[in-house]
Length: 327
Image (cartoon, rainbow, N blue to C red; front, side, top):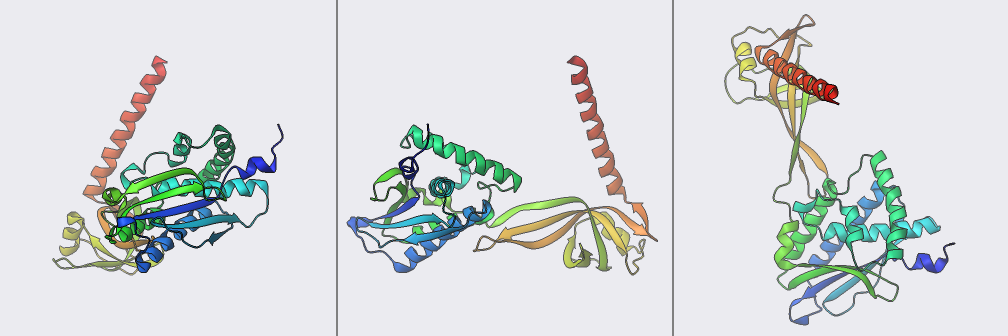
């Protein structure tokens, strides 16, 4: 059956944000409202960037009944597919903004189809486009659920909203052109804290065989930082390997111009208030080997680590071979 323009119009691309205020007030702190809208707009832009979509965001005057604002997502590409895609952004946004931090491991895109208020025709049209977006996301190694910028922006939104004593709850709705809600999700103020990040620290990155050229070693005891070149960039790092520090302090290792180590490097990170990832520190956990006249000299801890990994690998191979024989 051929689609008509009317079929496409049934899928909407208008987001309504409704701030519910105490005593049915419709007056809200302007700084809070503006900051909240800034975070929502930033999330919309981040979703669009992930899927390489060019969009405009239009807004309309507020309305009473608490405080209500509407945002229309408009694609810069004038075609039928683009109309559906902008609707996907609105639906994704409502799911993202109403999913607590502890639930980020769940498949957010799949949650769209749990919404009983979306009729089957809408779901089918959305599914076709969502499948395309999933494929595109896989190609770009993008993940909405774990996107640091989106998580931080969402946290900022609820932390700001939580500071306004007049706000009782907030709801997000997909609406039609007449402002009639098609699907609405509400978050109560008591639940705002579920959406706020406890810490801005991210999981550290662990590199098993990082190479660092030593610029400035620490030759005496104390909590002093080392300096080196990592990937052609100067870094300051903590030497956490007591074995290697002892070798250095006992003058068993001679540093020359270009001396380097191969090590297990931990890179500590956090996200700033804009949702950008920043490196905040480097720690050398284990020195696998160091170089003398370009010859690698394995450390005791490096040897033990290598032997453990080899034993684990052999055990895994034996297990796989055993299963293969059984089958």
